[in-house]
Amino acid sequence: MAEKVHIFDTTLRDGEQVPGCQLTTPEKIEVAKELELLGVDIIEAGFPISSPGDFNSVIEISKAVSEPVICGLARAVDKDIDAAADALRFAKRSRIHTGIGASDMHIKYKFNSTREEILERAVWAVKYAKSKKVDEVEFYAEDAGRADLEFLARLVEAVIAAGANVVNIPDTTGYCLPQHYGEKIKYLFDHVPNIDKAIISAHCHNDLGLATANSITGIMNGVRQIECTINGVGERAGNTSLEEVVMVMKTHKDLGFETNINSKGLYGISRLVSDLMRMPVQANKAIVGKNAFAHSSGIHQDGFLKHAETYEIINPEDVGVPASSIVLTARSGRHALRYRLELLGYLFDREELNSMYEKFIALADRKKLVTDDDLQELVTTEYPVK
Ligand code: KIV
Ligand code: ZN
Image (cartoon, rainbow, N blue to C red; front, side):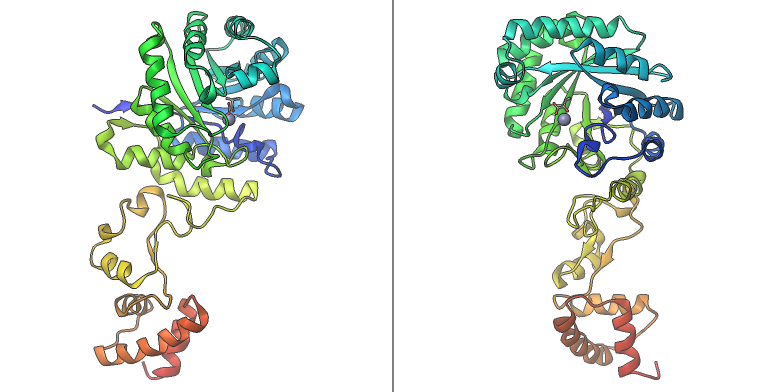
């Protein structure tokens, strides 16, 4: 039996911190409803103390969706926790996500404090959040990726003892290597006696392009919640991309994990978030990029046309992309040209195809990309009777 990994989507909180990509409340509600349809387990709807707009969005999202847990962020500060609890009052199931810096770098420079004081504040924050009318409390140990392991283990043990239902181990700066992040999680499972009383969560940033890999090594070592965003949007180089971690688990069933995500909705929600945030998805982005299922070299096209799995490990329909595409360039072969001509309704014998191919290559060298309109023109010029 596969083990469930909870998907915690933070597109509307960490994701929305991207400069210039802020969403209005109606836009956030639209995204939240789509996240619900997608099957995410937890929606981090905002950071209520940060602005009246964010506070209001958390309220409206809580009213608009009913299946996922609705989560609000709060620093380990009473006014943050009060605001989060207040904004979450309409949620069917609510969670406060509170926490504090755990690395010496954060303790010294951000908080001008000591490990002992941070530990006390963390325990206080969890207890204070637990005293509010919310269903769950999650604790984040900010910059855990660079924190001292022994201290991190003490902190995790203390916040679980204080009642944290979920403990988040963020690699806030995207610093860890997959092996190190995995070892960190394993160390916690080996050294925190009460760790089975909470769900351990991975929240990885992508500064070195390792967020997905780190989240996956996290689950291989005991994490059962992944915090991620649609298209991997987020601070700096972004967060773990939801579509990537979900499809890693779906593609590698041998890992023994499953999620509640309906993967057929991935492409649609990727487009929606990209459009609303006015943030294009890079063409070669895994799973949802324009080229993720496009084949352009002759060798690949020939193999793909013989059997799709020669060059595709995911069926595009499984992620909501209607079909793979054969892109015609000067690297394309006869097989690809014939295929695209047939899609347009043209059948040529071998000799005709050879002659068409020569003209096509000359055109492709000039034009780089040959479109259906170009093909149409080529055919009608060369073979007006066809
Ligand atoms: O990256 C981070 O550490 C965060 C926390 C606030 C959870 O976003
Ligand atoms: Zn973050």
